[in-house]
Image (cartoon, rainbow, N blue to C red):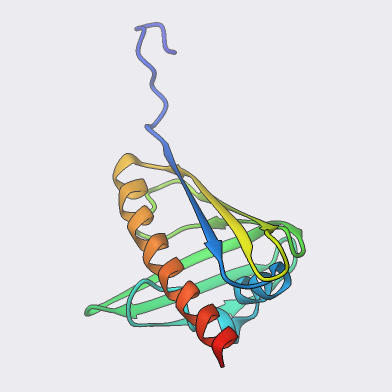
Length: 152
């Protein structure tokens, strides 16, 4: 708080999404970390390109193309605990001026399912709302891909 009694820090929000995914934890972790698999789901619409240097301090670069838009996201891996946890920064023109943080936690739920918890922090209220829809769209695609692989 400032001396004026106002909180002068920028407004920040976070979002949390939980999903049950139809695949074992090791397989889900691969879909989060292998570029060829990430390309199949890591955009809510259209297609994407992925450059992924999976190591602490390694770079993550995602280019989403769809609905007449091209959106670039840049990140850096902060934590890696295969196959349970990934933490990375996530920055684009839609995340705002700060650097947001994405935490992905995976927990086995029997032999063929995984509980996913995504926490995306340091977003404006508007960015949190738009990113919630984006992540949910991506997770719908991920569930579809995992379901197809298991059925195939």
